[in-house]
Length: 106
Image (cartoon, rainbow, N blue to C red; front, side):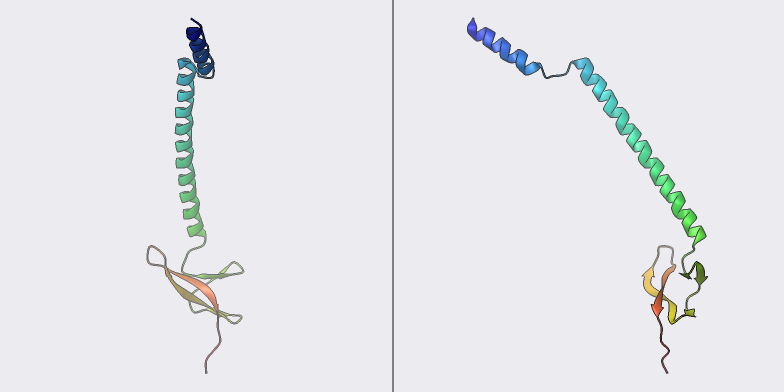
């Protein structure tokens, strides 16, 4: 008898920290909603970043060098620097240009 009471007490103590089925179902539904909300936010973020990147490319096209906000084409020499390719080709075929130090060879 004492063994049964001790066993019953141990089971009650062990189960006292467990959630009811209703609580587990509620938490499961909340987790599913959070997961769906997270996926929706990630999709919105990706769409926003793509739109921002497209807008940036329209405002500052590649294939030119910028100095003080002014675009310069490849080969332009300004203040001892030349607008030249760095060898990186961007997807779509445009070369990436940058300012390099320039000295005339004679």
